[in-house]
Amino acid sequence: MRFFLRLSAIIDSISECIGRAVSWLVFLLVLLVTADVIMRYLFHMSFVALQELEWHLFALIFLLGGAYTLRHNGHVRVDVIYQRLGKKGRAWINLIGSVLLLFPGCYLVISTSIPFVHSSFMMHEMSPDPGGLPGRYILKAAIPAAFALMALQGISLLIHSLLDIAGVEHDAMPCAGQETEEC
Image 1 (cartoon, rainbow, N blue to C red):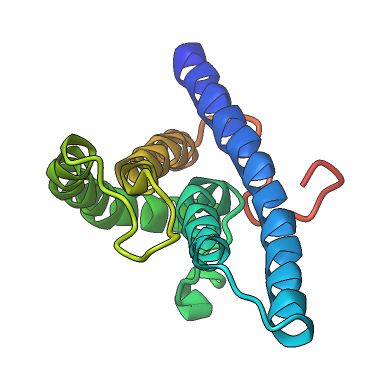
Image 2: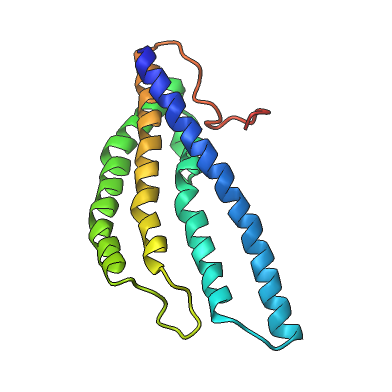
C-alpha cells in the first residue's frame, strides 16, 4: 500500500509541476494577444506567426492543463448525484468513470494520434501560410503527451478511490475538491 501511495504522490507532483508551468503560458498568451491587438489596431500591422503562436499556446494550455485539472477535481461533471454521495460513493463513481471512460478515452486518443504525430514529424510539417510557424509536429506531439499525463493522473485518482472504497485511512488526495492554502 505504501508503494501505491508513493506512486500517487509522484504522479500528483508531476501534474502539479506541469500545471503550474502551463499557468505561465496563460500569462504569455495574454501578453501576446494584447500586443497583437495593439499592433493591428494602432499600427495596422499583423503577423501570421504571432496569430499562429496564439492558438498554439491556447492548445498547449488546454491539452497540458488537463491532468492538473483532474488532480484538482476541476473537470465539468454532473454534480447532481455526485455531490450528494458520501466518500465511498464518490470513490465508486471515480473508479467506474476512470476504468470505463477515462482510460479507454486516453488510450484511444494516444493510439490514434501517434501515427498522426509521426507523419507530421517525418514530413517536417510546418504552417502552410507564408510567414507561419515551423515545427507543427511539436504542437501535435502535445496531443498524445497530454493524454498520457491525463491517464497517469487517472492512476492516482484510481489509487485514492480504491483506498476510499476499502476504507483504508490515508491522506486525502490533496486539492481534490478542497480549498486549502496549498491548493
